[in-house]
Image: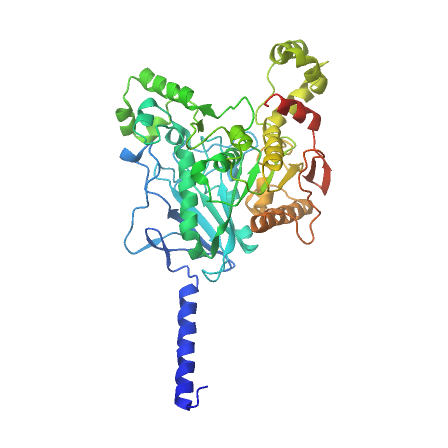
Length: 513
């Protein structure tokens, strides 16, 4: 007991000073945040509730000798870096609206640069020790386009719901995924082609080291993405290099489980295509490295992730042998998820192809995918187009449930956005509802859309927080059960329903075992 008034006053002063000092240390200010590389400043949103930091470097610029190399550590800077404007999108062709994807789905026309390894953060934390759950968004774009500055990826509204949102850039196209024997030879892992995935891993490593400064919890990180972003989430779930960097996964319309890999190739084939490219151009790899980045865009070719066994093992095999990251999964697809028109074919041609492809199981296939006339064929081709995505996410949920200890939750998005063009519940239509960014999309939305946006974003945020999308005021979303696969339909109404096209799913999935 302090008997002296002087000692009592002194002790009170010490406590006041200590509390003040502690508060000063933990207050999160947009004026100065210490991160790897130096100090940064940001800005607040119009409400003053959300702090926004844009263009934070998470790796050295991958230019010059660093082109087609794994991302290198951040280069330190002097003073305070102002992080209030959009960073450059990765090098790609200028954005041009097409199909259902209006300008809100695309990167801004500028800046676009090879110097692109930056991330954006939205946080409503007032102090740096709040340990808010973190969601890291990974964009789509077929691994050839996209960026973290797309208007519909804005993280402001989700941040208001109590999570820290991070959107990171990664290299795309040739700059992100060129494989070549000489590139593999100079790599300690003796592989090449997955620079874009390594960028994502570097971004997650940055989050683990630095997100606490923004009020985030490095031990509660969810990776989330759509289309190529969902492919990326799938890759990260099986990559040994991403182990321990995340704790939950959200994958919207995409995965890499089934045959007909499309954007994904094996290392040998990818290297051969890279060698053929330099041979055809009559140019050495060293010379290719020196070409201006915009010149590379004129070189034809399709580039995507490479199954190399080091960065990216076989996805299905990783689940079969239990080497994947066993984390809770939220996944699903859209009612009109296909991304291309139907091929020119007749019912007779379709049946003949089925017999060639499926042999003794062709009869079973044609019962599930009938083509008795033109109308039936058109419906079947549309179903096949949707299943190109749906089958991946169904298989993922099934294997997570059977091979892992954590639950999976599956959705089926059916809401057709109002207005024109009308492509149904098209590929990418769902993520603006989930990310609560309808305000950035120029469509004549109705009250049902805003209600769906509110509920979907709440499901997503609940999952980011706890690994379970359910919460007060929301219809129950059932845990996925492969024996009785119920999904939640996200549309005009929210309701539990049987999995669409389950018999077709089971047949196609059986071909991959």
